[in-house]
Image 1 (cartoon, rainbow, N blue to C red):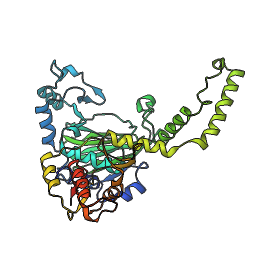
Image 2: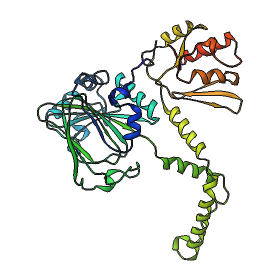
Image 3: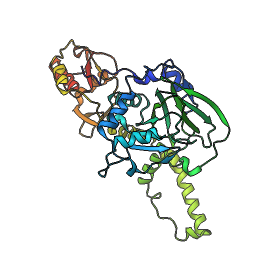
Image 4: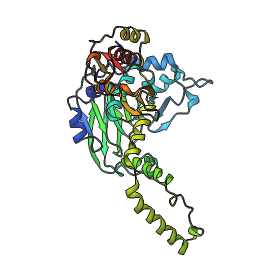
Length: 398
């Protein structure tokens, strides 16, 4: 069986003992959450100090995938890179021992444990996920107080960091409302605590925060960024689509509007009338569906063993229990040619319309045997369908 497909529920692991339902109902997009464990082995299957040192010393990530900062001051790339742009491990660790924090971006594209973690979050939250790794020397601080325009999960892998939280100067900021445009004073401190190995911290966007490694040991933590979209983004999409289909909405602004006066008033009245008509004409569901399709289309497959999948597919019989991979987000839709399109991990799998009843059953997350699938397919056709979906990495034997 494909090891990537059989991954553990890493999102549930970083939230434990909180359940996903409780987290979504009480915390998500609302307030901070700290989960204390003080268990150095808790994140071992996701990332270790040895993983980070291996990446720096053997892969030599180029700038800006590897950066060095001290209290928000970025070190010039020429101080730790070779002329070809590759990072110089000796220079990187020399700066580290002098107080610089090593920042590694998008390491989930290199480290399998981080790749499985990001996919686990994507499958639940239906949002793109990014990772940033912060390796901080004893007593070091990477960034001063700031807020992010996306939610983050902080996983303290090794060492400890002292955290301070403040108020939110802007509730739920959009990507177009970054911290650097506001530069607010952090305000009154609302909480302070220490994250120890194995601890998880969730911070909703807009919450001011800062962290500093404790003086006794270096700190390694993962910041998992949830690049979700806002309700308003879908509303804007729906309005844009309505405008494309309405001739009056496509009309030019009246000449003279820029100077104010009667032309501006007439233009504003016309736009207000358009807004009133648009309310009943917006197809919000279609806009939401396009967002969902774009999210799945942008995903990429995790690592897998094609030879193992071929063997697994060949072994599928009518009585073989099969189920959709639990780390997949899938979508079924009809095409203009009356085919069924299955969208998963950026791939479009086109199948005859007659397969739809069987596909809907197979995609429900439970285990099913080919011989029990509904619809008009005969036994051989069901085997052809199921074996193809195993080869595609969509189904796996239970």
